[in-house]
Every structure is written in C-alpha cells, then in structure tokens.
Length: 88
Image 1 (cartoon, rainbow, N blue to C red):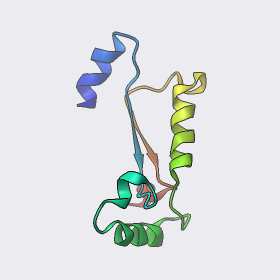
Image 2: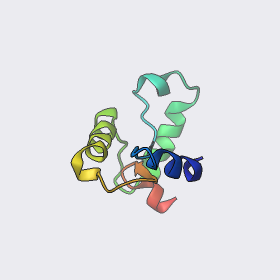
Image 3: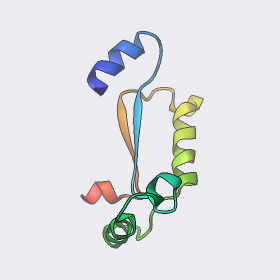
C-alpha cells in the first residue's frame, strides 16, 4: 500500500509515513485487547532498554515528523518501540 501511496500523495505534496509503536498496554486501544498484558510482559523482557513506550512518547515522535524538522521524510515506517524492532 505504501508503494502506491507515496507517489500518488507525493504528487499532491502529501508525505506518507507509518508509525509502529510497540505494545502500549495502558492505552485505550490496547486495554480492550485480550492478552495485551502477556504481550507487554514478553515485549518488556526482550526490549534492549527494558521498557515500553508511552502514548506521549509516540506522540512526540509523530510531532517531530510533522514539524519542519521531519520535512525530508517520506515513505518510511518509523519504529517507536525503544529498540525492540532492532533485535527482532
């Protein structure tokens, strides 16, 4: 989907990015998922920083990419998982 979206939206000067956070067990969305606490425990155990991210931290990363500082970024997947995806 990203392969088609980047050129189509880019022609209209719209940037396309996906933000991929790790589990955020205390978020409204995750709290309704069965087994989220088990997933969070497993994620925490293998995370190189031994922590999970918060919704606030994900928001700060998104804020950067939509600011002038992130203007050159387009067509990317941005992991926001305290390094977990780097070792997966």
